[in-house]
Image 1 (cartoon, protein in one colour):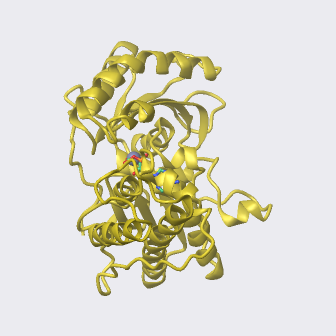
Image 2: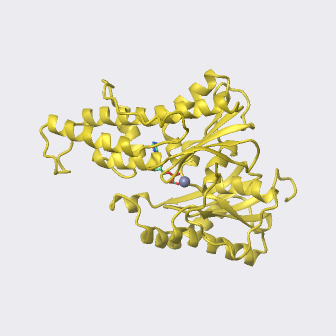
Image 3: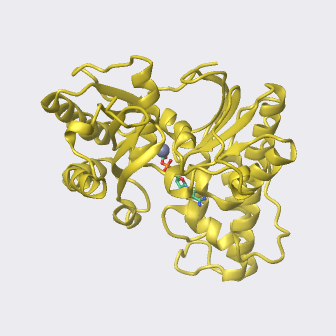
Length: 365
Ligand code: KG4
Ligand code: ZN
């Protein structure tokens, strides 16, 4: 640890999907810099991520992103106590760019290298001091997650609910058996003729709904904590087709778009279904495991309705619910620096043989 600091300062690299990001994070909490170069605009034309294109873009941007991070923070290499990097899960080529870059930095600067699970990063974003809970909004002090807790991670590739009884330990309570929540948002966004990624577009469209009378199905999966979103996608297709027929639109012409009002109602109905299932299961899991707090993370946690509903339901039960600001819910390096600090403190060190693990799990049942 460097003098005067609250814990180790980590330089953290994230490149698992379509954001190239480098952050400088102190003590797993304080962000000195968090630069994110997003490829969203680049992949929008294809309507999704093209892995080779993503990996090449990481190569193109990783050095400028590092330079930008240094220029944002009043720090230098001598302040850095370690280099943290996402080594999975994610796209193999994208992960390799970040891992090899981080390895080279750690090696030439003589710093320890820490491999971080991307999903653990989404969980640890809740410890970053910019994260909020209902208490913060009431004007009281910033609340940190307390154990035991229940963590819901909802991203483009993953949806799971885990119990944490202490740092870095996870018991999987449930996960999606098919599509991830973010994937469902993206696919339904496409069905509605909205842009990529569908999540933020659906959230914006849904805000314009007034009738709010289109009900999408909910896949409760019995009493299990597992999730399923593929049936919802199929139902969405059926409901969208019926709405198109109602408006006299040809079924096979994507340029003939539904009216703005109908898109808003459909987006609202879909979003309600996803949020309802996510919130209901998370609250039940928190009650059944006697959790003392709830943590929400992952790109879909940028959704305002999900954030507000989960925080509200938790608050009604006297449970703090900690939610990172939207920019720390979607992929970023700061969350890797947050998780990396706890890994470093636990003595975790990666060797120069650290390899990409595209299907790295976070927890098992
Ligand atoms: O965590 P993330 O940035 O990348 C992965 O690790 O997958 O999550 C990306 C996902 C996308 O599916 C995107 O549509 C979704 O998060 N997302 C949202 C919102 N913002 C991003 N979904 C719903 N509402 C949002 N506001
Ligand atoms: Zn992610």
